[in-house]
Length: 159
Image (cartoon, rainbow, N blue to C red; front, side, top):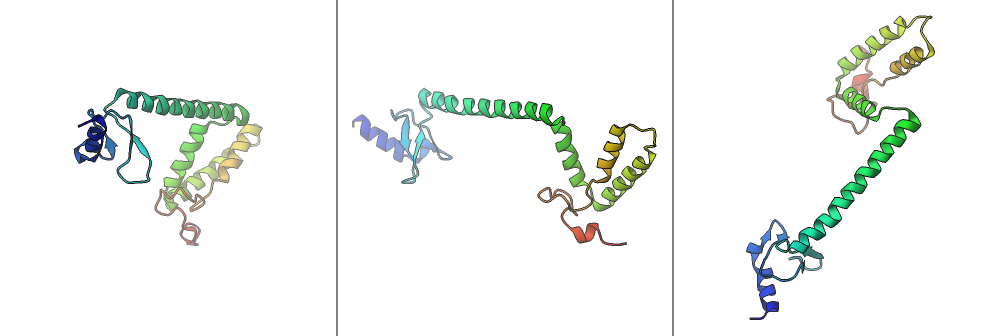
């Protein structure tokens, strides 16, 4: 039996396929056709070249994605003067609140805004104005984490 026949026999052996990943040390090929025809090629992970190829593609892709994300975040922090982590956490935390909890939070914000007196600086007034405009109820489509988020008639129904 020559190597070409050994390769084909190994490829047909279902014991060499683990969850769709091909692993046969007797098969000399690094790239082999997938078991389902016309679906492309896969690597033979019994060979070192397959691992080198995988890590040579995957690791640099993750590094590039990390560098681009970090650069964008630093640009956004400098350009827009916002703290992205705090903004993300605040949106998610507010979306998880129930309607009653959101009404209580809004009442507390209104009380806090009234506490900002005439002697307050422009920054304090601006923060208080933004805090009053926080949405109640379902003003967060796609963040359906809470039970009542997205149900406007429940959130704004008169009591």
